[in-house]
Amino acid sequence: MQLQTDEISIRLMHDDMRDYELMAKWLSDEKVLEYYEGRDNPSSLEQVLEEYQPVVRGEEVAVACIFSHQNQPIGYLQYYALDEMPETDRQSYALENTQNNFGMDLFIGETEYWNQGIGCKVVSKIINFIFDQLDVKKIVVDPETWNTRAINTYEKCGFRKVKLLPKHELHEGEYRDSWLMAIDRDKSVH
Image (tube, rainbow, N blue to C red; front, side, top):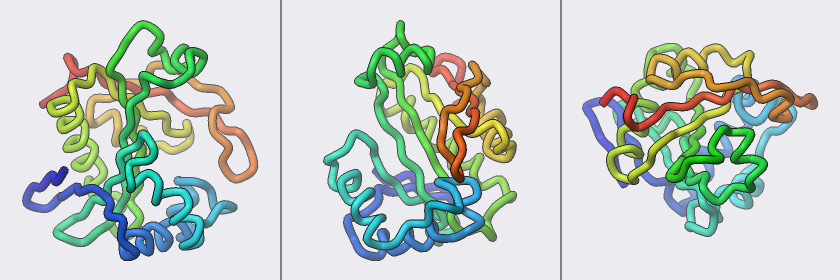
C-alpha cells in the first residue's frame, strides 16, 4: 500500500531499523508522549522492536504505516479490523450488530508539523482508502476527551461522537475518559 498526493504520502512501515529508530525517536519525545502513550511511558529502540516488529511482520491484526509530508516522514498510523474483538468490547464500541468495522490510531511525531492541517489530510486519505479498498462499513477512533486537537481533526474529517467511554485508557498513571467517535461508509465525504 502506497498512498501519495502532492504533499502527503502514506506507506507501510518497513521491517527496517530506520523505521524502528523513527518510532523510538517519536515515542521518547515528551511532547508527543503527552498525547500518545503518556510521558511516563517513553519507548526505547528495544521496546519499539518488541511492540511494533510483530505488527510490521503481519503477526498482529494491525497494519502499521508511516506517513510523510513532502517526503519527510513525520508520523505513524495504524488501522485494524475490529470484528474479532470480544463481545463485551463490541458492545462498548456500539458494534454488536455490525460487521466490517475498523479502528485506527495515529500521531504526528515531528512536533513542528502540528497545527498545520496535516493530520486532517492524513485522516481523510486513510479513511477514503479504508472505505474504498477494504469494504469497511464503519471506522472508529477513541481519543481521550481532553485531546481537543485530535477530536477537532476527526470531526473535520466526518467522525461524530457516539458515546463517552469512562475511564477507558490508562494515561500517565490514571484511567481517563475517551470519546468513541465513528464515521460510516455511507456518510463519509469522498
